[in-house]
View (cartoon, chains in turn purple, blue):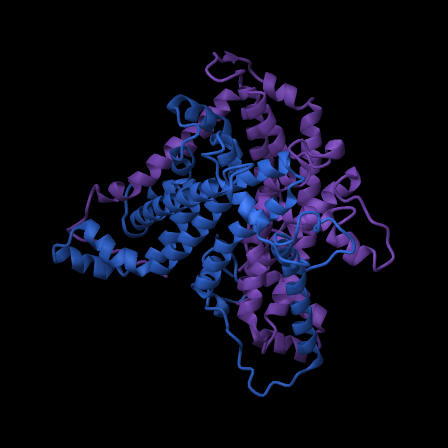
Length: 302
Length: 301
């Protein structure tokens, strides 16, 4: 939409600032300033509230890169991010393609049903999934594995199964939402192009691979970026599922648990600020990396 | 998001409305179509089962949840978990749901008012640094709350806002998503109309109220629902700010129940079920509106 710039004699000079002021006031006080203050704090040692901070240079960051807690959190969180994204994206895309079936009945009902899980509190979802994963009385072992003649697995007490459990929970909670995003991306599909390709002898896979997927690239960048941002903030679900220390073998210990314990349990504030920055840098680096990998920055040859 | 469109003829200036059942008149029930319906129904069943199990579990007698073979339905439904939950035996649950409601409601009012105002400012005025400010805003969309968490906490300590509702509400008042979303909606107000109103002597604030707000009504109600949901389900920040059980929100209360009284699973299920009812009602009430607007402007082909 080309914006008509109407140059007029009546140009309010200071009005716009009146409109944007409330937002920027709140934004500055509760996000902008704390973000800068956090950077400054991360170069100090400050233990306990209302204590004096002493300048510590890069000490916190040095401690961080040799802290086993950091690596436990980083490993688990990355495991979750990779596992959930690699499974959710193809599942959500398949669901979206199914939801776009011509002449589909109950389309509204399906969309609503698939959206709802992500509108439920992570704590509540984890409470429900404790019943799904329970070794003795869980739905998964009793209603899926046992009928298949498989042994009952200790989903929430075997360190090797804790992260897969959290990934399954993530799939249940977020596949539907991402399917709706893909549905929007698929709306720009040109049926004519598909027909032409069919006439030219392209099979269903080729049509998907060379027509649908390239069209979905912006959606894919959007979905994966927000999946990375969300994954690296993982906190509520594992807390309620396996406890705030990550459960047996600390296999569910995430980076935000590490931050929470450091800053709000041990009141090691300078170090906590450094962890907050580490999480942020990881998110930014990975987001930019995947955008680059998907050719998001490449100039389109006209 | 600037994106490339391979076929300029298909370049859309916005997101077209979702197709509601393309002409299906006289469609044959092909194998593919039957398979699609069956697969989707199976997916809905898998999605709904844990939730149904939560609802029925909250009505089972204590001990019946942990008994083999598993049954979906309670033998004899009982309300005892609900009555015990509201007798405040373990946590003041009724009060915590009330706290959640007050906090979510006030957060929603604040975010909607602030977003409408800033959206109008960015959509309809030119001022120095406008684009710079807007880009700054958009980049913050990708920053996690963790980046500011520790200083926010020390700020709450020095303001003596720990254990207060404003300590939860005010930090969520400026929503970058809200600002962006409402600006997109308000761009549709024609400049000529705004100018005409100015010549007629209407005040700037009046123009905002009579043209901007009505036109963005749909987007504002979607933002309201999404903000309410986000606030209703929020856990990390409220668990840091709210210290006493009487001031806590329900997710913090439920997490404490799971942490300390995991044996009382019936009560935990009863509470979990109750707090999802408003979400479902909210959704069924505004479903069409929300689902169609939800992804608007975020993903453009």
